[in-house]
Amino acid sequence: MRVVQVVHQYPPSHVGGTELYTQSVSRALAGRGHQVTVFCRESRPRGGLEDAIEEGVHVLRMWSGTPGPARRFLATFGDRAARQFFEQSLDRIQPDIVHIQHLMGLPVALIQCLRRRDIPFVVTLHDYWWLCANAQLITNYSGALCEGPRAYLNCACCVLARARERPGRAQASGCSLWPVAPALTPLLAWRGHLLRGALRQAQRLIVPSRFVERWYRSQGVGQGSIECIPHGVDVPRCLPDHRGAPAPLQLAYVGGLSWQKGVHVVVDAVTGLNVQLSVAGDESFDPYYVASLRERAAANVHFLGRLSCQQVWELLSRSHAVLIPSLWHETFSLIAHESFAAGVPVIASRVGALADAISDGGDGLLVMPGDDEAWRSALRRLVDESDLLPKLRSNVRPPMGLDEHVDRLERLYQACQARASLT
Image (tube, rainbow, N blue to C red; front, top):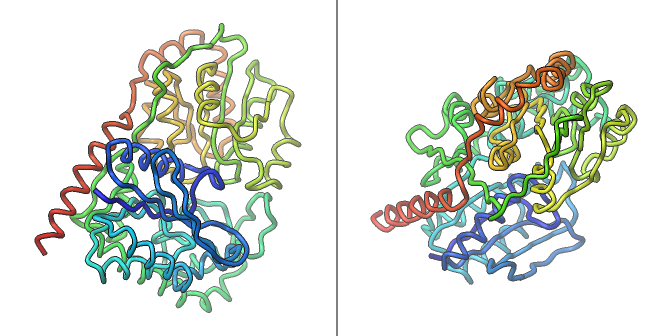
């Protein structure tokens, strides 16, 4: 089967949940004999298209300049260079199916290219970007969780707040931008119309968790066409266990270093506790926020920078618990499932898919997001209650593996291809 994976960005230039998922799935499919191509966007001067073969996967990287946030937003409405590169790629590859992982910074016209050629395609809803320009259902003007567009006025206020905010600072309360927000609502409404229309044309919509499915259905998207396939975890053949005696406890945070990830909450919470906290993540994404973390961190907080996959597993092998203090509705959280694969309990915010994935008092603890005292109390329990950590660890169960996940993807691809051939 000739499969094209479309994603907004790809390793090694960008390392995030969607990017790593696309890479692991593409390599797994190629390992099963499929002809797999990844089409992605790079940020480089001028324009061009680069071919590479990486672990059996054909990677096509296109670029047409170095887009900032505004240009990435406007690209949804049209980007002639990206469309031309995509058209050329389709002509060369003649795919049997296309899997759209993310279209941020790419034009919705790519879907028109597929429809014109009668190429079946599926979409994975990795986040809320298709209906929320902020992608994470958390407001830029107050830092509060959002339920979705309200006549797109709140979305316009979010865009304006992001345009004027200082990087790395805490969000201000309230929004002083409502009077000028109506000027932006037609553009955001048109964006919503375009992207909803694109989703309606997909053969199937894939979601990584039931929470994401419930939210999109609440917005009138995907009635009858959504399939929940949790991400598979690519577990090393031999998982070491380097945990020593739990004194002091070895805690870990692995993920994005940005305000909505709530890292500052746990950095504050461990101050004065007999624990060691390792913080791993790309410090270049939001250097202002990272600087603020370093300023407030006590001596028991250690910043490890960006880790390779192998280094992440090594960190998990010596950690007693993993912390996920997200302030937004996480859609899956790969690190939570990797932690379970390594037999490590998870302490996480009671929000989004995390609340479904973690059993409070079972294989981890759930804490109110952003509540410093609640987090400090939960971590103190790990220190003071000697039987709590062994109990949590005994309840950890392995998540779905990558092989099973790819099995389900293959069956979905085949069903969509068969259905398309009948129409």
